[in-house]
Length: 485
Image (cartoon, rainbow, N blue to C red):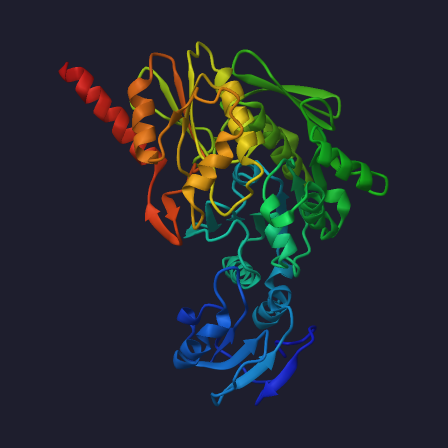
């Protein structure tokens, strides 16, 4: 097959459209003999600068997105807007594996990762490929995640591997960036879940309306919009539902305050789940309304793919939190330490309120920071949330990246009303140690921002840093000191 089929391209030099290539990559380090190298400009790196390296490693065809010096005896092809067309080239190369799969997309500001884990759990013994923020999992094979939603070429490779492993279903997080950058342009989704939309990524989208329109694109890519599952307790979810329900009456809505699927926490470690006028009481181990919302959304998807409610309810009781999502660390201490990925105002509200609702809670100690090179407007809002809902606040660092940490802290501090009623410890390790050492019986320490991440980004370099690892070490260290005394 002509790998350029279906897209506009310009042959610059020596292209045999029927030639067979051994592979295709946009990372010159992965190029091997008779590979295609795709050069495009990223946020930090320009792939055109690595053409020399690609040819040295064996590239015989170079796809460029701008005019370059053609100094090698290889093929050159010019394609405008290559990021949006890479998926077509990859699909042609791998013979469109996605068309033979059933693909479920999950989008929203918060809850995407937990929802994909829950959907996989509710599918029982059905083999699943799961793609998201924490990892890419193809059957029993697991790869580190680079982006929440991989580049289109990497997605197609995952789909190809999925097909070769005879796996039928893919459950994937679909970020707003991936929808805007064309990473999922070549996918027609079988089902889609909308969790919520709250402030985040405005450094990229600029307005909430732009952010919403990016998320909405997922539902325009459905084979049948009836296979949507939408949280209508969320204002943007309700807007999406109202737009599509008129012509798509089989959409499943869900919420705590209403919907086709409704959920309610009971006082004894159970929840009520209501669907089509039937109410079922189910044991449920997870805390927080956000976990109930995520579970309801996952149930909706499970129903859409044909799993019976009877089977679903049997599996709900065994649902566990995804790594770094309201994850409790138990080292025998008489206070609780919970690690969570919360890095938006709404997510912070959710986790702090969930902690506050735990029985016999004493004080809430919240450790938080704001990422560098990201939406600055949410920083003071996050500060106000933490101040309003916590008893003790520790402001610290969280992936400053290339931004001046002092600028980040200045932005955050603008949100505090009580200007000096917080602890400022820019060293994140010391911040965690301070929280552990001050904790009293029945206190809850919330370590927010990183969750599953095992790194700290300073400049452009990643350094090993694991909130859970450090917290456990400090808990054990404190216990040893107390035992000696």
